[in-house]
Every structure is written in structure tokens, then in C-alpha cells.
Length: 538
Image (cartoon, rainbow, N blue to C red):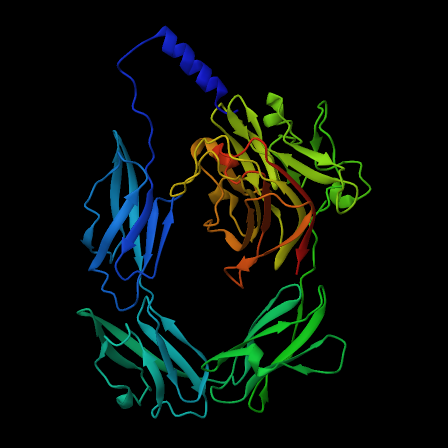
């Protein structure tokens, strides 16, 4: 579909002109695997041409052994000998050459070191400043800083670090203590401080979600520390069980569950007999997806296919565009597959499980190429010449759902069209096609991800830019993949796993594709996906 004109032009050129000065084909190499001795994890990013290797803290980064690697192109030649011992104390940059084209890759080593410094009678958690080799603990005003007992200390890699001063000798912190920490023959000078504070217990942060909240506080280590909360306007306080509380020295946090959406609550912390000031917070709303049952749609102006909103709908959420498809039904007149006479996504009244209508997405063959049916939050942004298309994913969103629940039917066809597929994956004719549903929230910055304020994530298949679960803007992510036909309608729930409990989303992305590799022009021309009744679970 996207390359027909290019194929025709190539055919005309072949008959009109024969030359030996043919340009080299563009072959983009990808490292598909890297085996590193002792590594706890290896993550490969094809977007950034980067391999991130996680190593234990006892590993000397100056002596890291790469045991083996694979590149997905036989003609690819690394600019250095990758197998062997390398110094990864700083990023290792090198090129991979295919024909006369060079591509830069980088190997980055991560060696997280657990560091801690605690003292008896500490208030709150310690501050560890790794960049400046400083550590700070706080105690009450009644504690003598010239006679401190250090309860735990670890500033370097486990079991191999040497300290210039033993813990038992660290007593007088009036002016702080300096000591040397040596590991792998490298010595760092650390500075430890103990500071007096008037605070005995106070709430430091409240992070409300829709039906839960995370609360953090500081108190005195070793005392009975906890929280009490209540619905605002009620008189009875509810004390959290200790199983809902986790502690780190004098710092403690709680996970409060069972709350009601859009409701005001009050909470205080206690440490021994001391109580903090009562603070209030309001939970987020349980916002539903607009037009979640796809009852609102209307004909594209002057066309015979549909867009998934209706400016005249009595339902306010159905009057504006929230969902888009590859048909190309944007309000600015941009056309997608429909401009080539291919409509892939339709409203369907055939036994919809909720309301009168559902969405039907089909994958089809067009001149030997796969056209994949889909529906997503965002807007199709047009074909790019004859080599690909652009999509802007995402719609503004601020709540944090725990799952996406929906109804679906799927007819999985046998793969009969193979264009390409991601590095490290093998797809062949005769395999079962797979549908793919994604639900994710994030804080993507459109200035970095190429989209717009409304729909921040740009996908441009003509330039090899795809949406992946490695996107740095993702806060919570869930997906569902099915490689077989269903027996009629089924209900599916996709858990959304959060990579951060504190970052707040700005947008939501939901994507439904009939063929999981449709953006690579790979799949079955006979697959069909029906979806309906999307519900966010909070």
C-alpha cells in the first residue's frame, strides 16, 4: 500500500536505463543480543542504538568481559573487537558498518551500589549524596552530637570495600567525620554529618490516586511509627495496620487503600507519643474513556466512511475526536488508507456486547502489501510519500487507572504477507496472526517525542520510528497479545503496571491492532478484530 508507486517507478527505471553504478542498499544493523559475564540484565534499545548492561556492585567496571554478541545482518562489521575484556567505566562508543554506511552504537554499564548511613535515635531517613560523597543523618535536639552511635554504614561495594575508620570509632560528629573508602584500588573520600532538628514527626508527602494514597513521613527510628486517617467530616480515625507501613530508619511510608474517588480525607502521622499536624488530601476522579462504547460516530464529510465522534451527539464526550484510525478521518481532511479506497475500520452492529455498536478492524491485502485495521487514542497524520505513514498517539489524561477492561472478538488469520519485523524477531508465512491491545499512561514531552501537545507521541514508519514499551515517557504500561481466534465475544482485563508511583501522567494511549506487526506490513490479510466497551479500572 505504502510502496506501490515506488515499485512502479523502480520497474520503469529498470526498463529505461541499465547501469552498473547501482547505489548500495540501505541496511540498518541492530545488535540483537549481547552476552556479558556476570551481568544481571542486558537491555537493547533500537531507538537509541544503545545496550545497557546491569552488573553487580562487586564488578570492576574497568574489566568487563563480553562473551558473545549477535547482529541481525551478515554484512555488518563492528568497528572494534567486541568479544573480550573492555573498560566500561565510561560509555563505550563504536560504529557498525554495512556496505559504506556507518551507524554508531553505545554500550553503557550500570553498577548500582547500595549505600546507607544510620545512627541511633535518628529522625527520618538519611540523605546520601553519591555525586559529592556526602551522607547526612538527623537527630533530635536532645541528642549529643559528640557521642553518636552509628547503627549501620555501607558506602562502597559489599564485602570488598575498605574503610579508613572503623564504625566503632565514629563517635564525635560535632564537625562531621571524613573517611576514605577504597574498592578496586580506587579511593573516595566521604564526609558524614549528623544534624540536630526540631522535628520529631511530620508528614513529608501525600500522593493521592483514585482509590488509594501513598503517604510518607519522618519520625524517630525505633519508636512506634504509624498513620491514622479518616474521611473528612467524620469523627472516627482509622489506624493503619503495620503491614501497610514500611520503614527506613526514621522514615516511614504507608499505602492507604479502599478510598472513594473525588473525596477529601484527613491523615496524621505519629511517632511514639508525638503526632504530626493533620493534613488533608483529595482523591482523583474515576474518569472514564470518552466514547468508550463507540456509540458515537458519523460520516467523514464528503466521504463514505466513518469517524469516531459526532459533533451533534447529545453525549458531550462523543462530540469531539478522541479515537482515530488508519482510515485517516481527521477533522483537517488528512486521509489515510481510505484515500486509496481501503477502509479498514468500521462501526459494526453485529451482536455488540454493550449498546448497539462496536468497532470492527480488518487486515487486508492491497497489491501484495498488508493494510492493518486499527483504532487508537490519537490521530492519523497522513501518508509519507509511498514509504510509510505518520500517527500522533495520545490524548490528555491525568488519572492513573490500574487496569483496562474490554470486550473483544478475534478471527486470527494465517500470515500470508511478510514485509519486515523488529530486530531479533522471526515472523514467517504460515504463522498465526496476532492481535495487539496496548494501554499506557505517561508524561511524554511532545518536543522530544515529535508529536503535538494534544497527541505527543509521533510514529513515522517511513523513518523506522515505532511506539515501543521502552519509551521513556511511559509511567504505567499494559498489553494483551492473542494469537488464536476466540469463540465469540470474550472479556479481557489488562493490568497496568506502574514504573513510578510518584510521576503523574499527562496523556493516555490505547492502541488496538488486528495484526501486531501491521506497522511492518506483516500479518494476515484475513484477520478481523472487534472491540467494545472499554472500561478503566481504578
